[in-house]
Amino acid sequence: MRQVNLVTMNQSENKNFIDSSCKTGKNFNAGYNCVLEKNVVIGDDCSIGHNVVIHEGTNIGNSVLIYDNTVIGKQPLRSKVTIFKSNKIYKPAFIGNECLIGSHVVIYVGSEISDNVYIADSAQVREDVSIGEYTIIGRSCTIENLTTIGKYCKLETNSYITAISVLEDNCFIAPGVVTTNDKYMDRDKIWIENLKGITVRKGGRIGAGAVILPGIEIGEDAVVAAGSLVTKNVPPKEVYMGVPARKNKDTPAEQLLENQRMRK
Image 1 (tube, one colour):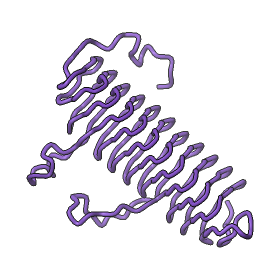
Image 2 (cartoon, rainbow, N blue to C red):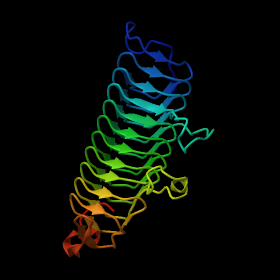
Image 3 (cartoon, one colour):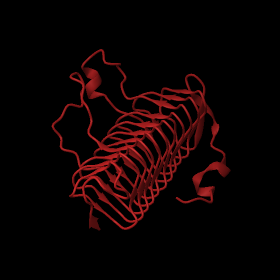
Image 4 (cartoon, rainbow, N blue to C red):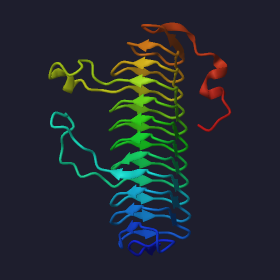
């Protein structure tokens, strides 16, 4: 690692602000108008696009590409009426090796992104979120705070993962899926005590446009069909569909993870 001088990177006219405490590895390249705050660490063979902001203490591994107008390590803002008020001091954001992060992405402080994760344009990853290896976060996805995403998952365009949720390994979330965590829709103080997102067990799959109600568990290798409204837990290895969703059949044997030639 080496320390980087203020302002200048590759060309004298490149108007970056690089704090003198930042450290980068070999072959680091930055576009125009980038900001690297105090104590940012960036590994070897990394490249960031134009107008990228990397906040204090962020740690980025080797061979990471970050495209234009992305923000890493953003601090959360709190409404005066939010239940998530706290004076918590978050850990700096962490980005693993060989990650690819698109344009206009915002990754908050306290996030941990494992190796080989792909985060597409305009996605949002909130504070206290962890994402496992080789997971794909599609364009304009939102992952809210206090959520854990496993490895080899795929979340497609415009899917919404609510706060306090868990997706285990090898889960598939189709475009436009909506998940929820508030049974009472903010009408009584009891909602605070019952706030809970969804759980999708290993290999669970949710089809396009499905809506999953608060606290629901989708079992291992279970399938929720497109357009379904899930109001109760889905048992393992069953296919649910409809409004409200009901069992249609068992998950076909050839579709079970145990019968797939894939990383597990």
